[in-house]
Picture 1 (cartoon, rainbow, N blue to C red):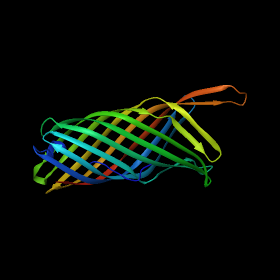
Picture 2 (tube, rainbow, N blue to C red):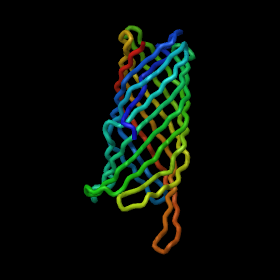
Picture 3 (cartoon, one colour):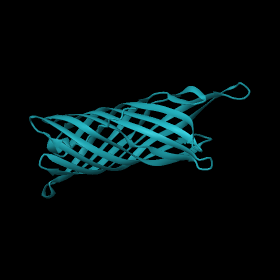
Picture 4 (cartoon, rainbow, N blue to C red):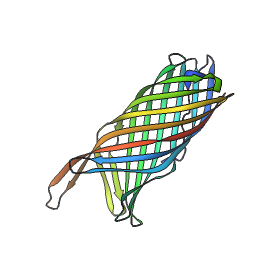
Length: 252
């Protein structure tokens, strides 16, 4: 997984201009990663803290804005799967957005874009590495945003909401003594959202916010039992992140 992190801190409804403008920024997202597995026989929900961080690039022309955002993990998400056997899953994540934003007016806007989420995990039991897993989610998202200018404070409150429709790669599982196995997954979907307070200081903008995203998909596990019979079962799988954000952006 790439160790370069890129992300966006942007309010196009407030700062779009008629001429071509460029912006770069940085953002830190300490967050809680929640994963859940559920079917008729399994019901398990676990979470662990970690962080993503990054920088951003964006181009604005009039009411239109094109942004490229690439975030990567700077602190792994550690989840205890079985305390009795000291089984720990350490997750590394990356989050990429390529979006087009259109400001309808000074208060409202819409956006559409491409989103990619990469998740890899290393599982250890009693300090021994036993398994690795990888899965990628890629697809489109649709959304919109609303801004409330706070002119006396040279700032604005911005809320953005969206919904993603992502295709999911096969879940790949391997290990030191385990041959690589791939398990089929169906498409993922789910909501995204962020509430932020953007403070403008000249050409600089400081952003404080709270961000979340929650995607669900189904994984189909197959194996052969001790009698040689094929066994197949589906498990509903969750991939969710949420937490406070801190960002900075400079506009040229």
